[in-house]
Length: 638
Image (cartoon, rainbow, N blue to C red; front, side):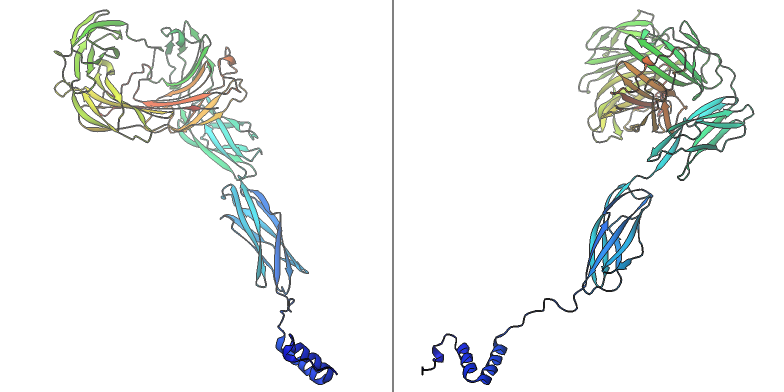
């Protein structure tokens, strides 16, 4: 019998011991095995606990929506439940902007699936744009999310506007107002009505329920209507909420027929009309003007405003000018192109110190050194001669004034000597207020002398580039200045396509601040061509209050220029300037104007105060604090 193995030499003594025990001592082997298992085993986790944890997942369909302002959309949310999930499921949406209302419908559960329909309503006040939201399903202490995208677009809407506003109609006459509908995602018919009509005034719209963008409102003012001003309301009714706009109607008494006649006989070739039309009042119908030898008879006018359209064709160049003129102060035969003075006056400059300006009334000559000079275009009557010689630095400038010079044609002023007859100007600091970033331009001084009959002689002294916000204002000293004469400080400032000019008068030369006028706003330009076979544009903008005398809108293409112009008081506040439709008038030629589909059209806007509209003379600066102001803005239409 072999010897039993030695336990100490066995590499696995416990395993051998267990084997022996089982062989020789069955019970002992069992006990040892149990003991060994208890001593050497480890616990393995239960990978399938009971009960299973609750789970939830969520999907939505669709995952995005595009909704108009004021509209709504829906999506379905589906939650899949698992494990020990029990109880109710709730859905919610977060992250969408104020004004978006989310409504969750009733949740339906079937087996391990819960569903609900969610409604997303967008208020009209929500800005158009793209928004991201989060949809959350929750219950039994667990949640799941899904992404939701919402795009808000402009809702259906329209606005109304009336032009012209205001409109003046004489008793017994009619006037047309253009009603413009600006539509957004809305093509339905809009039924128009006029409210607030005074007694004996009727209104008719054509069309009465436009599906397009314009309608013509014809106001008929009966002979029994009372003169005065009324605010009328235009109401537009459709499937949307009603929309209104107001405008002012002024009913006037018929004026005695005018005796006005316009004479174009003295105009240059490029100013002589090839075709003339007129309207008796602003907004009144257009008619071909009767004319003989370039004299046009408007003696039958009953309104204070004459609308006159002049077409000038000069070779390939065409000029179409629509002018609305306040003619209440005009009578008899008026020269449409007042000529410059017919005289030429000569003289000899001496004692100059550099560039020298010599003004005789509104006519001027510039000399660069001592010697003879001529001033053409001088008016009749006594005029001031104002001279100014600039030394280039300013410290030795010389000024000269001779008053009441009435020199015959080709007559002589003699020697104009800045040394013996002249004087050193006085100086004050002029500050230009209202400058902005990027402004550039020129500044300078004029001298204003009143003339008989209310005219004003404005003589330029000098100008220089704007440097900083101040400049030295040099003009006549107090000892050389006579009562009623004025120093005039001026500036012309440009910035991009905008230009502003100011001239301001003051009797005492002292440090002062001159305010620049307001910029003109960028106009809203609208194509109102309609049935016409040429491009008709309309400009709408808010006219700054300081521009009270002239305002105009000009647009041009190759070789053609079209202008709509109005004088003092006709248009204020919210201004609308529209090129009329002349298609139905005899003699009109569409080829004069710009074709409807033309491109490369530019526009020019302008306004002013302090200017005589017939002569173009600056008259405002012959009074203390008097101001001439103008502003212009140019740009591209297409």
